[in-house]
Image (tube, rainbow over all chains, first blue to last red; front, top):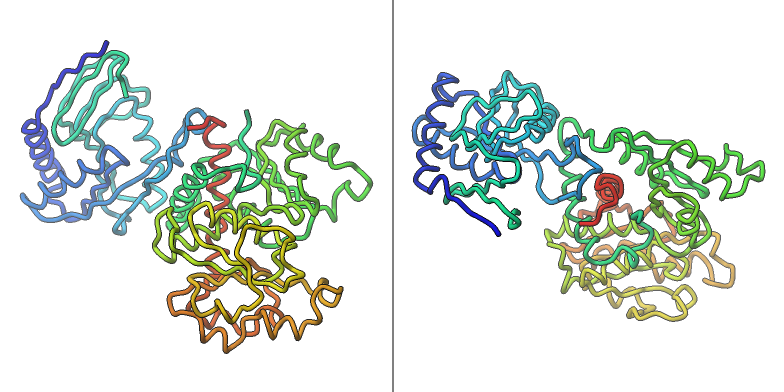
Length: 174
Length: 307
């Protein structure tokens, strides 16, 4: 038996992203040195969407992707999924990198991403933007920009697309 | 069950396609300001080279280091093999030190399979006798895919492999991988250097194909085979099967000129390939590191779990 519950619709996602774009601009007093890096794979579309909102409100910022496959702490414990790669379109030395992901859960992917980003240079600051913070952190990591706090049980899956956010419980988990 | 990388045939189409994607990923890592990643921290890779090699041994060593694995290299000239230690004792001794993967090169076909029966570690074939050289095949396929902007489907691609097909593990493995990806392979050699039986189209006339192929793959012609009743002499071989000025000019502008190295200038290569824009010879060396990173990561990074 599975149970799906939509907690955010497409309009809610769009509004949350717009608010996050404003917060990023406000926190950084503009976006002159801001670079958005979407975390493969779920953060990539979100970084694009955030980027277009920021461009609409302020001005365009460089958008790239970061892949953490080779920086994870669970290598050797699960199958490897190749095929995505990091694409950092600009020098990040002395810039402010905003890591973007769809869901923040244990924090282990973000830890790996911090390592992966530092291989490209030493940004002045790294910030974290997530659409959903579902709790259950296993590392001392906290987001700077949050679309929605969503208390979940670790038995549940959270599915995020531009069309909305759904909680899935039961055997049908991805 | 431990996963190995010993021949293209054994690895199979699905895993080859995945490894080509993974090679692309590793090549992107290699272009970063810091080309080293922590992926295989704590893993130990042992290079067991019972036959001379420069590029393959160095390439595996660097690939393992780029993934943060520890490496040990056994060069036979300075090992107890010279004191009469058997291959099995050597492998078991090194295994007792804690090795996660053995990279094996040996003049005898089948040695990587023997080694795998003596150790629980993963085994990578870095060339066994006339049999197989699958990491060379992987890097060749990746080089073609990358330079021609292909996906993992090589349908319609025409590749001529020229030289000592019969004694070449490179020819065997590279032919296998290219056919598996859908390319059309032609073997070009004197009759004495073609395998006795083969399902590959063959010709003894390089001039018939040189102007039409997408890839011209030149093999190294070993001087020691010259005059041993196999080919008349070096000059005659070069006249018929070497890449000279005239044949280089006949190559299509979008063709690729490949060679696994080491090159015998003046035997199979009468021109300087670095002056030809079709040459991929140095790309092959660079891509070799990415391909070997992909193989090592596939074996040690997934905990042996198949997807």
